[in-house]
Image 1: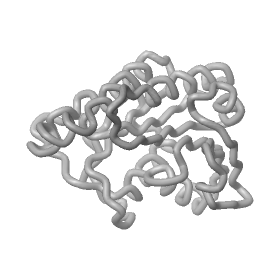
Image 2 (image 1 turned 60 degrees about the horizontal axis):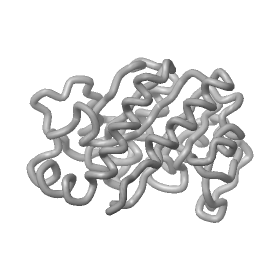
Image 3 (image 1 turned 90 degrees about the horizontal axis):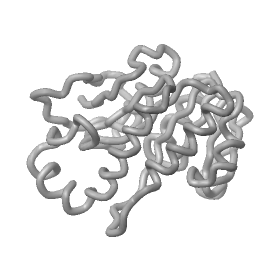
Image 4 (image 1 turned 135 degrees about the vertical axis):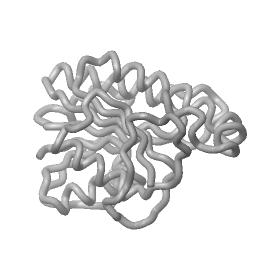
Length: 209
């Protein structure tokens, strides 16, 4: 499989990159800094650029079997637009080069997963620190839903640096669910399986233990 990862220098994207290479896939990454990536491999192609730069995105998309967006930002006091604007650039390039499959990581608190994180997260942490981020993640999800692509939205619960277990819940219905934790490695494991099996196309999923 030929896979493009946008957001591969850390977190879920980094775990996805490592797992994909370990399984023998051909991986392209779009990164803002070659130095921050700090990895070379015979099956790894690195495109230096920003998701907000349409030309950089267009250099990375052609020939891929699937695209995965795993970008993240720190809490901000100013309006956040990188998720929605960046995703618009990705979708435009995918349509231009006839790449169909998009997996995008948002998070617990986006879309229908609102109010499933527990009192402290839902009532204090998210409104105070993550409100602007999740407002843009909501815009990002809506853009994906309207894209016409074969898409999957992945909303991980509370992330840890724990090990890969391969044992987690994939929830399409969140009624009555309170999110727990999940390792970044297990989120990457799900994404890689889904890119190959496409079992959840057109769905937004909550991943949790």
